[in-house]
Length: 102
Image (cartoon, rainbow, N blue to C red; front, side, top):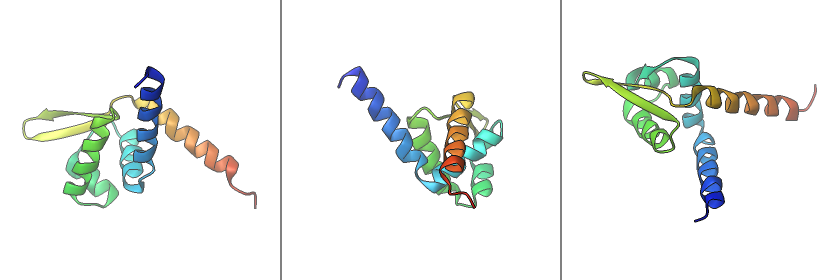
């Protein structure tokens, strides 16, 4: 796979992940907070800890989040917060501009 193909693949994979409403909600929640435990994220998005853990694992694999443990508890944060916030902002601007005027 060429470097260009690899880059396109990684971009596509991130878009697929963010296309999932739960994943999008988790990323958005983490963008608003410095770091959170899995249970805090689960409460924030109204889903089970096991489901949220699965999504956080996929986000770790795509380099969107990272985690640190302090004792027994993992705390998650965005790995590249500025860039992720820019993506979320660009999506919001696109939706606003693409929405029909009332």
